[in-house]
Image 1 (cartoon, rainbow, N blue to C red):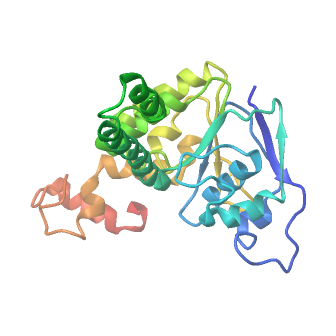
Image 2 (image 1 turned 180 degrees about the vertical axis):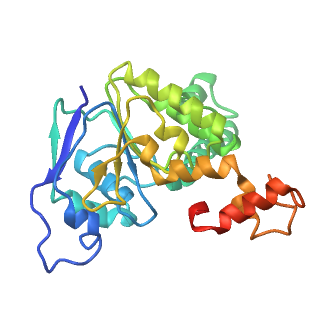
Amino acid sequence: MPHLAAIGWKRRPAAEERAYPFGIPVVRALERIALRGPVTFFVGENGSGKSTLLEAVAAAAGLPTVGSEPIERDPTLAPARALAARLRLEWHRRTHRGFFLRAEDFFGFAKHVARLRAEAQRRLEELEDEYRDRSSLAKVLAELPERRSIAELESRYGAELDARSHGESFLALFADRFVPGGLHLLDEPEAPLSPQSQLALLALLADMVARGGQFVIATHSPILLAYPGAQIVTFDRVPPAEVAYADLEGVQLTASFLADPGRYLRHLVAPGDAPGDASGDASGDASASAADSPEGG
């Protein structure tokens, strides 16, 4: 049973309220989204409102953020806080465990952690000079806060988080910070991840779900959306509605593209250069003719 049971309204936007985020069609049309299981995906085109609602849920739930600023102080999340004040979250079991992550915030966060570590290391070097002529005990006591700070950072985020690739850093963070029984809200976590790394993330999700975790994820990734038994809510409909994986336009488009890339690319490149384009071949000509026809899309 998920921790967060449903998302609805305490007070709906008035008819005259059209400023962002209350003017977003799916926000205005929102009734109640029941979260039926441990993994729920929000899908939709850019600007559809899925990330805005996810941010507002994070603010309403009071979850910590993985980012340079907490939700309550981040100026970019001011609209989300305004929306959060109007939302009603229904709980099966209230939890403050877990976190909220926007992919765009992570890179700044990694640099922030690296800066804290560098500052502590620089202070240790200064103490080396300051305590050169003093007792070893005095030096150890003076260094203790900085060494504790470095140890805590490395324990939570690993050594030199920003020295890894973005994908490696993401997966390391998830492996370290996902908590049993926690609520994790992730906005487009696939952004820095290769297909193989997305599969690794699915394995992490499955492990944490088995330990009582819940995930609400805004994503465009057909790989992540294939999580077995996941609930998928599309924001391309007004109001938002559940949709089957096979019925998602993005999934259908990806499958069609992979089956015949040349069909989509032949107008962008010289004849014969598009992947899968058999220039001068009868089958290639037939494929091109089909693509030009209404039935061919």
